[in-house]
Image (tube, rainbow, N blue to C red):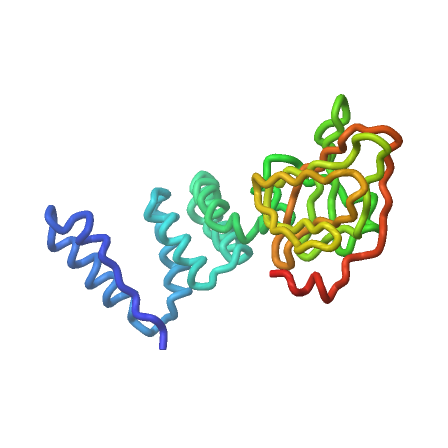
Length: 251
């Protein structure tokens, strides 16, 4: 059985000024006509949109009924065809006006964002391109240069469950790496110690010659800035992947 349609906008906006109009709007139009069973609600939504368009109504009431049409199953393709067909009879300016509203109402469906695009909106630095060092990672990561002068800074982004292999930053003097977490949730672990959860704003100082790994939590994207610390005879040694069983214990 279809959900009963109710409305109280009449009483909220005009109940004191015109109780009769409020009654006709809430109790008769929406209470009875919209709940009448000869035609389904989706069809009523289409008829209503076409009627308002034919009358030249393009204010908030039309937006409400476009949203109601979407809610009741009218697809983006269907509303485009409906407005186009109606335009042939009601006029070009009305078609343009209604299309502007319809594009806004169906925008989320028509321009669905990927998980990567959604995460990009959460962080202020670019995600960049697939990581050229991907052979040393489990899962997909991305790399974007932030600064290539004075101090090298890169934004490293990990898809959920992605992490790099164990590795060591070697240096005779100085060296090492600093991580500044900027989005999502991840982990850092030094060999022989417990994994440390990382959240935006956390800073990790990694000395040279310390075996470690870092990456995303199992169900979260994660980004950090990677800052290479100057040193003498620096190099990076990639080692074995993080054990999947041990990683799987993280939440």
